[in-house]
Every structure is written in C-alpha cells, then in structure tokens.
Length: 104
Image: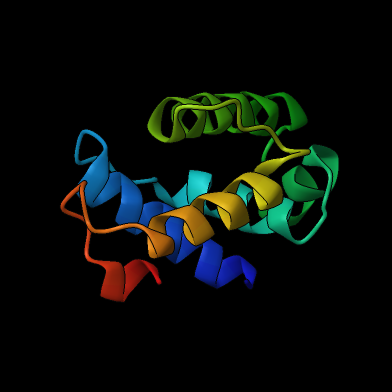
C-alpha cells in the first residue's frame, strides 16, 4: 500500500465509517510524510511550519485514528494497523456501510 492509497483508505473510512469526518489538509500532509518515513522536524521544514505545531497535528491525527479504528495508532505503527485493518475489512462482509469497492 502506498502512502496515497493509505490516505485514501483512511479518508474513506473516516467519511463513511466514523462520525463522517475528514482529515484536513495539514493532517493529510503529516500522514503522507509520516508514511514516507519523515520525522516531525523534517515535515515541519518541508511544509514551512513550526516543529511543535506539526507534533501537535500529529498527536491529534493519531488520537483521531485510534478512536476511529478502535486500537492504538501511532507514528510508529500506522502502517501495520492500516494493513491489518484493510485485510480484515476486505475479508469480512460489509457491516459498517463502507464501500468495499473503495477500501479493498
């Protein structure tokens, strides 16, 4: 799964499966850059934000994803959680009303 595929998966899951929310632009950028292995410091430099602000955005992002997926999600485990959740979602019948055609 690429970073963009993971972001699409997360965004679709959040829109259709959890409180109908979406990631904002900065959350999406932090997600993509984290997926690519960048540190918060590197992300802040690339995007032109303060390091502390990016850390705060990241913390909120992982907290939101943890609530949505029902398990701890962090910068360190986001790839494993999403791969596991995608496999699990695609193997089961559609019980959350989320389009499996989009997620799988």
